[in-house]
Image 1 (cartoon, one colour):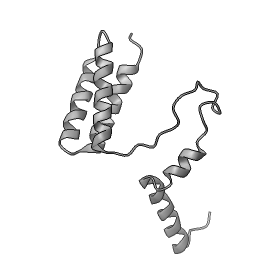
Image 2 (cartoon, helix red, strand yellow):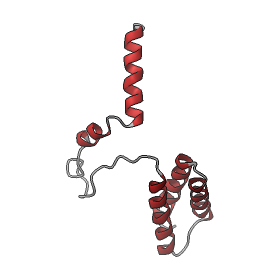
Image 3 (cartoon, one colour):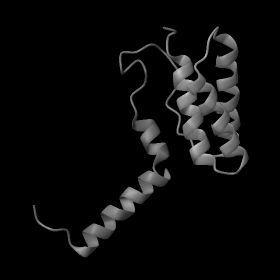
Length: 112
């Protein structure tokens, strides 16, 4: 494998940064196969999510709803939800969203 020239390296770095920052989110969304194309059930189209306070609130409400529906919740899911809410309230949006997503994943899992 030959080494990249400085121009190629800069172009690769810019393309990677654009993808990470979501600049191509519209292209990624339109290029993503639909649920029907994937052979799965009809569902919402793929959504590109940004790390915002609004998304924190949305995930927090979803976690609360799931906790109310479940007869038993694990201490881990409660801890993750509470920590996610706290981090979002303190302005640490990304870590808060990550914890809220983990809590939701645990709450969606089938009961043992």
